[in-house]
Image 1 (cartoon, rainbow, N blue to C red):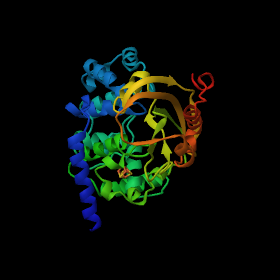
Image 2: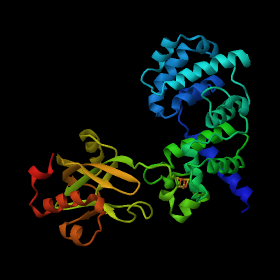
Image 3: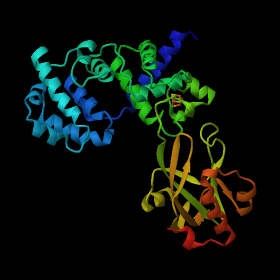
Image 4: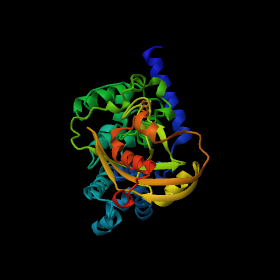
Length: 360
Ligand code: SF4
C-alpha cells in the first residue's frame, strides 16, 4: 500500500467514525464562525461538560460580534464568571471590536488574518478556518498531537515548536475537503478513544489498522512530552469481589501498563455505593459491601489514587476467573499496585479479616 493510499484510508475511516459517533454539541448545530470561535475560546483549558451551559448563555445574550463588541465589561465578566482564565473574555471583546472595524463585523475567512486577531492562536485560527469556512487548515491541539504521535509511532518531543511544525506539515497531507470534520474527528478521537491517561481504547479505534504504536504495543510511551514534569493523577475504584471463599480476578491487557498481570475489579473514577451496586448486578446478588482504606501507587508518569471496597456476594452468576486463597497467593500474579488490597483479600479468605484496621 502506498503512503498516499494509507493516508486516504485513515482519513476516510476517521470521517465515517466521526459521522456516526460525534457528540451533538450546541456549537455544532449551526457552526457559524462566531459560534465556532466562542466555543473554541471557551474550551481552552476547560472541559466540554463545563462549557456547554456557559456557551448557551453567552450566545443567547451576545448573539453577534457586534453585541460582544458593545458589551459592557462587567456584564461580560459576569457571563464568564466561574469559567476562569478571564483574559480570554477580554481578548474576545478586543477581537470583536477589531472585526467590526476591519472586517465588516465578521471573522475573516483567512488563516493569517484570523491568527493576527487578539486571543487567536494557531490552533484557534485553524479551527475557525476549517470548521466554519471549510478552508484546508489543520487545527492541532494536544489531542491531535497525541493521536498522530501514536499513529506514526513518533518519539519527537511534542512540547517543541519544531515538532508541532513538522506535525502540521504531515497532518496537512491527510486533510480532506471536509477539513473541519477531519479536525474535529481527530480531536474527538483523542478525547474519547486515544486518551491521554491510561491505556487508549484501541479496540474501539477506527484507525487501529493504520496505527504504528498499536502495531508495536508502545501506545503508553507516546507521546513524548519533555515539558510535562508533573505526574498525572488518576482516581480508581478497586473492588474485591468475593463469593464462596473465592475472589474475582481479571487479567490486564497484553500491552501497556502492568500488562498481563492480574487485578481485582478495577473501575475508573471514584465510584459511590450506588455505582458499585449497579456494577455488581451482573455478577450476582450482594450480601455485604464494606468500604476500605484508600491506597496510592506511583508510576513514573502517573499516580493512582485508589478507593477500595470489599463486596461479598450471596449468589453468583458469573463464570469468569474466581480464585481461592491458595491460587491468589501462589498462582496469579497480582500487580504490586494492589498489594494492600491483596493483603486484605488474603486475610478475608483466611478468616482473619480485621474490620477495624482495614475498613474505613
Ligand atoms: S489504535 Fe490505539 S493508540 Fe492507535 S490511534 Fe487508535 S486508540 Fe490511539
